[in-house]
Amino acid sequence: METKDLKTIWNALADNQLVDEKLAKENITEIITEKGKGLFSKMTKKTKFDYRLYLIGLIAVPLVTTMVHLNLMKPLPTIQAYVGIVFVELYLVYMFINARRKLNFIEYSNNSFSIKESLVAMQKRLKKAINIEYRLGVFFGIGIILFSIIQLVIMGGGLSNIDFTEFSTIIAILLLAMPFILPLLLRYEFKFRYSRISKDIEQTINELEEI
Image 1: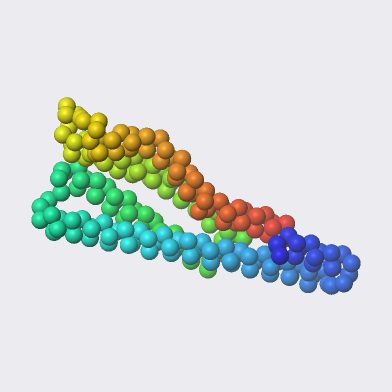
Image 2: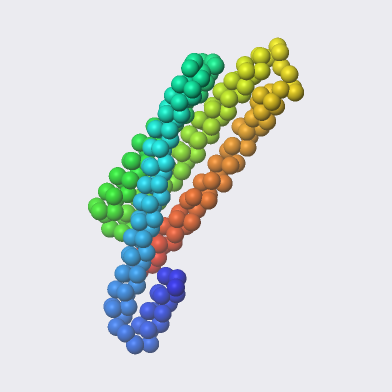
């Protein structure tokens, strides 16, 4: 049952003097408070998932690179390949540290403020985090795409020897569209991941203000 439905029931009981008005208000406050705590729990789970995901990425990228190097028994083809790997690692390092900071902030705000103040603080932090992560995602994503295109062109013999029948050249041409598609994909991803919890946080804050 939705929180607003429970509020309606308790208010109706109080209006009809079936329960004490103070008791009804206390129960409504408790219901909304529990909902707020549930949102903190959801946000913590989301952030812990991101934290573990970025940690796995930090370990996996150099590990895979090392395995490729050992199997080929020679360095990667070009300096661009190494630059691209470092670029990916820098992004993963930042996101990993950022996820750790978010976990610390959620724990601190949940234990230090009232439920309403905690939710307001988390709402502001979430909006700021989404904005920063979106911009970084676009920046690093486009950077990696450009490095990939350069790598593929070099593998195809350079600009002076482009062969449009070569697989590497075809992939490079297809990747040219990605800088325009990537921002749209990231917007969809952030909407999918955060729209529901953002809406629930705002709704819960409004409900607490109405008490």
